[in-house]
Image 1 (cartoon, rainbow, N blue to C red):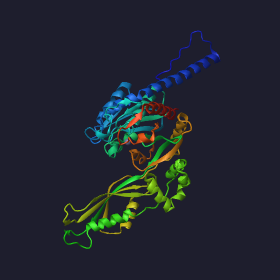
Image 2: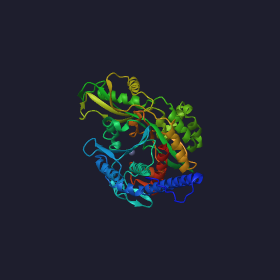
Image 3: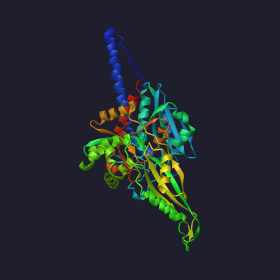
Image 4: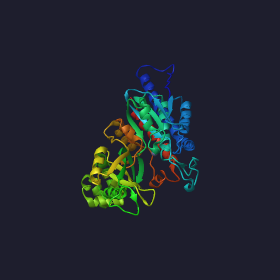
Length: 473
Ligand SMILES: [Zn+2]
């Protein structure tokens, strides 16, 4: 709603009744107009997603500048100012700001790139954006062009309402999330830090609803395991394959790898994980529900931990630091003993773990001075807490639109761009207003990815409601 114009009838009586009439008309106009506009923006969401899916931003190579052009045209039409920046040729990023009062600003973050699609396994064109059987089909429908459009439509609705906001709201669409964000969110934080000045809150992918039994369960992601990618390099004397030595680079690498593979790092439940397991307890088999409800004690039982790793490796991984041995490299010739042998490790740390101390722990476990450890990549640990007005509002919003639904704080084993912002001290939640059935979730990075039209419509309405309340004076 852009303006409220109320004209008094010429013969309208003065005094109390006049004020009453005026107030009623203004209120009714406000509520009616905002509802009409909200549904207008919600109704457009599925069609807009279909158009966005047709913008091919498969990464590699990304070509997110095509996505920038898509959003720029929409902002031009809406009369919203925006800025863009390429981190490399074709790797575009775009952001737009609705200005408001002094409360800490809110960022709506979404990535424009999508993972590649293997056409052989799709029943329709992954970049066709077909709308059929009540669904929008295509790469990115769930990860995360669908949520990007929901954020966009809510952002446009907020702008169109013309209501004065208590805080800035910033829409940020980035490149390169699927490859780590170095050309997208990470690049913006380094090169355009002014975007995030005064920002207190950020909503990103990583959360959302699903149906378990009779219940709709929403996860709001607070934190993630922290990746630490390492290269172990074992050194030794080179030689000919025909004359074995007692120890070589390869035998040392194998021994180091074996020591790590058979190590189970200390099991413990950080507070966010405890809250998550408690929330998930009612949906477990009777056998383990009690263990989930008191996971802090359960982690001390090695038998339970072993059972959990066998039956639910994803949940198990939230309860300790882990290292997967993922790559090995020795000699490139079968008859040459190399001077170096390499093992690559994908370690994922609990969010409160100091990475340097962890590397020291690995050095002790390997216990071999001829093996050195090199860091390939690592993030700094950071957690967002549920102890603030936005989390409360999220809970209330879910409850209003999905009565009886359950909200569970989430901790992810994988990572999104949120870590860049948690590092800056910005409260960053994985948050979505959609409810995606279990089988459809396999479409994320998989085949025949789709989202229901109803999710796009209702998801936008819920997002608009949340934004309106969070920006209200
Ligand atoms: Zn994603």
